[in-house]
Length: 204
Image (cartoon, rainbow, N blue to C red; front, side, top):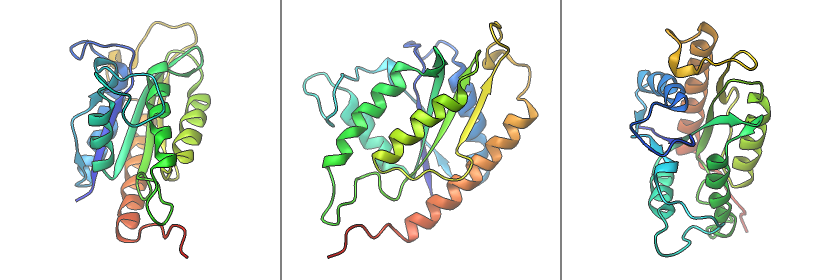
């Protein structure tokens, strides 16, 4: 069975506080579950002490090593983030920075620990910026070894200068639901292929 690990990079630290990013992750999680993909509990990064840095362990008090272990135990990563100032939020950027360590953690064939694993994005915001955020996220994830499937971002942006959050919508918009199904289907298909046929790496 394939496994997906959602990361919620909302700025809200309190896990009891509703998050539109959680709501978008839930839309994707439902579609993954329908494909018999195991969905792990969402990790709300801001509720953990993830220290600044670009190594896998920044020392005493750093919660990233445990998060890293859960990410790499899964076949698919959902990186969820709100849009702030037209770009991916700072918590998402910190998570991406910590994965920079993968570049120096290669195996004997030059493969990073994220090789053969798939990543998708769940993005929400009340202003335009979903394409800019996904561009940042996917380039960063690809740089550190994740594989990005076709149709890899599920997003929603509200009316410019509006006040309605995704979590407050009475129902999931039709196009968001349709996209979520495609994202989950493509990611699960690709993850299954890579699990059975890993990337070869740098063969001698």
